[in-house]
Length: 308
Image 1: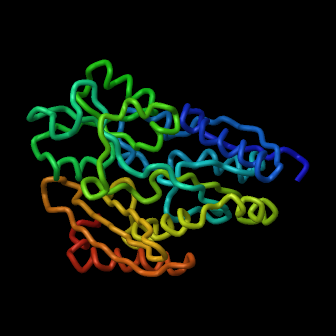
Image 2: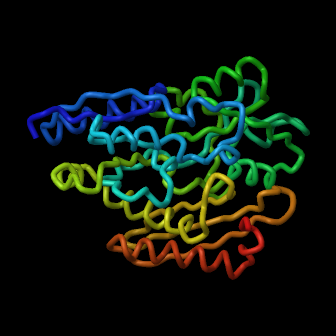
């Protein structure tokens, strides 16, 4: 590959960091040159409504996929948590990079933890998964919508619109903003969403040359963990309208997968939880583990939590 690879990316500061990180790895590890194609997606433009109301996280990737399909780019870099569980025909995930901290972060200016917030405090989050788990921990809170890129969310906190907000720790750490984190939610308190903290590299499914090259960047432990997590969501029809969490961690050669499902009406029903574990050595085994976790959630009554 002598022609520079064009990388399609969103134009937020975090998305550009992620694309530049991939650009550097392509150069340093594979000897491949790459240029960036910055794009604004529908998910970036629609800030007055929750993602679950306007099409879900897929709104962050559709324009990038159009650039791939039209040949304006060969590679798109995504936060894996924003990638739909089923890719459109003609596209493929060529690599999953090593995961950053997958946990959620408590960010506030006057409080060190969720427990310190006064009764009825206003907390910002537009993630149904976070909303549901926050209200399980503190039913007294007022959880208000919070959209926008990471810098916008921090500005809204600093302007006094919220007493605290919840963000992905990975993004804060990648941008050198770990100092804004007052405390981290352990996964037992707030289970992350599938793929949180990992980067996914998407290409056209027929680009075998680039697929072979990018496979060298893939971090197999992260890829298998994320495949298990995403299989839970796929089995339950997961989307932004479903408060579903899944997180896998390694204990030696054993992959331990925790999943949780909340009700769309956060106070209407308890959080359902399942935990499974198995020796996992390939993608098929990882997906099978995810399906087992989903089956256990269904056995606990998940059917009544699912839409339609």
